[in-house]
Image (cartoon, rainbow, N blue to C red; front, side, top):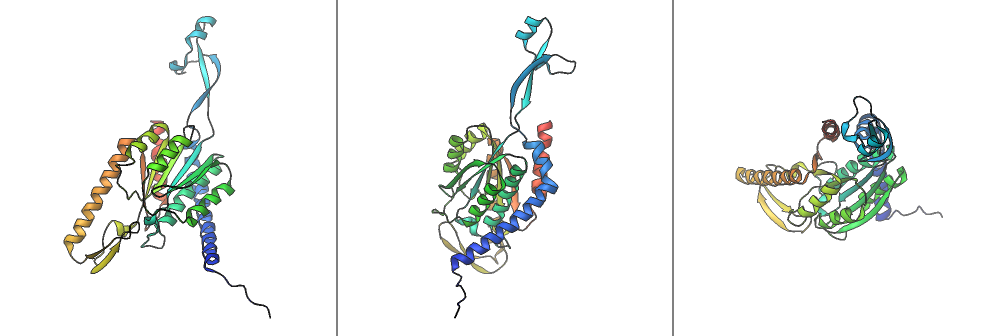
Length: 306
C-alpha cells in the first residue's frame, strides 16, 4: 500500500515562504516596470564620472571643465570630456531582529521589509546594476556581496523571509561598520528597519557611511506601534527582550502618553537622519507603499536637477 508523503513543519514553512517570494516577485516586478523603473534609472544610473578625452570649447560649455594646460599648448580653449559611470552598486541592509516579526495587519514588518527590499533589488536588476545584502539584528546575521541578475535578487528575497536570526535585539552599528569597510566604491545603501533602537551606539557610524555612500532609510511602521487602541487591559510584550507590561488602554492618559513618546522618538529619528544627510521613507504596514516610494524617487530626481 502506497503512503502519502508526510509534510513536516519545515516543509510547510518552506512552501509558505516560496509562495510569498513568488507573490512579492510578481508584485514588485510589475510595479518596477510600470511605475518606478524610469525614475530609478534617471536617479540612480550612476554616481560618478570618469575622464574620457579633450575637445574644443563650444559656447555653452561649463567653464569649470576648461583644461588650461591643454588650452595654453593649443592656443585655443579645450575642455575635459567626461563619461558618466553607468553601473551602480546597491546594498540592501535589512533588519531581521525580533521586532520585525510583529504585525497587527495582514503583513508583518518583516514581510513588508522584504517587499521594499525587492523593489530596490529588481530596480537594480532591470538597470543592470549590482545588488548585495546585509541582514542584521544587533549583529550582522548574513552578508551577500553585490552581484547582478534576477536569481541573485530572488535568493536575497528568500533569505530575508527565511532568516532565523541568532540575536533578537536591534543595533545598526555592526551593519554600518560592515558597509563602511566592505563597499569600496560609492554605492546606494538602503537601510530597511523599524529603527526601534537608541541611536547612541550607531549615530557616528551612520554619519561615516553617509559621508561615503548615498544612504536611504526606509522605516517600517505598524499602526499599533503608533497608537494604542481602546481595548481595555492588555499585556504588551517586547518581542526582542520578552519583557511584558500590563496596560489599561481604556484610560485616555495612557494612550496620550504612549502617542507622545512615539512622536518624540520619531522626531529624534528624523532629526538624526537629516543631520546625517540621510533621506527617509516611512512605510506603514496598513497602507499602500507605492505612493511613498514614488514620492521619494520624484523628490530625489528634483533635488538632483536642482
